[in-house]
Image: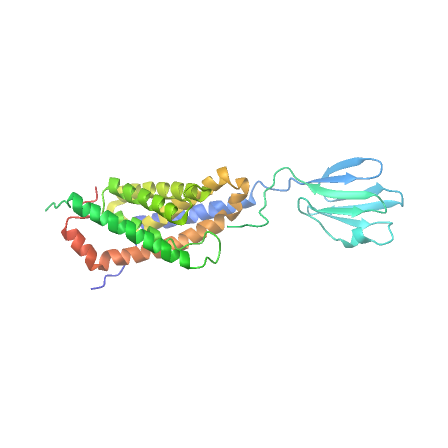
Length: 125
Length: 182
């Protein structure tokens, strides 16, 4: 004897609740976090702090000349540098907390710092 | 006709369900986990089934016995894993019992099991938030909930089929189990 299994009224209620919880948990991941990263710049003369919210180009002076950096869409790169090997320029964009760019010949060091650590990079169980 | 199961019969049923739960959880340990935390939750099958068979007090006895015995078997009794399983099981049993008492026959085991999974996962997430991982737990929350939803619907379907078709359950009902949902 087989009876068909039909869903009852409050089954749909719990499906609805499940969907709501799922969507809610997705939404809290994408809201409010923004970018709290700050850019720390160390040059020969002084240290500077910037945020990444605005797109702009900044110029820092070192012993060889001007290092130009670009901030765009909360990412950062070295646009031009007077150094011979161009390692800093070729390093490309950085955007995560803890990443850094450096130009040793021109003595410019750039690093991204944050307040809260909010990313899992590995998980062990 | 109100038939009450005797104390001996109740004790026997609880023991059987506890044993079944432990066997199922051992079976489940043999299945490799594709993703951490993704489990079928087979060991919760007797617990979900008991919701329509036992009195509230006996359901809690079953739940607590399951949690403690499982922890003793796998040696997790004094680790943080125990906190997860204890808080999760307790909250989900509370919610499932409440849902069943409120909605009576307007909800099937599928819905009940789903509610239980939501409570279980929420309790675990908050336990993890407070003791282990902090804010970063909410990054895994969607995957966690999704896994719970999928596995609990499967589990609920299995229990519902079992509840309708099992001859053993008809025998138990003849002894007076699950006559009234108190």
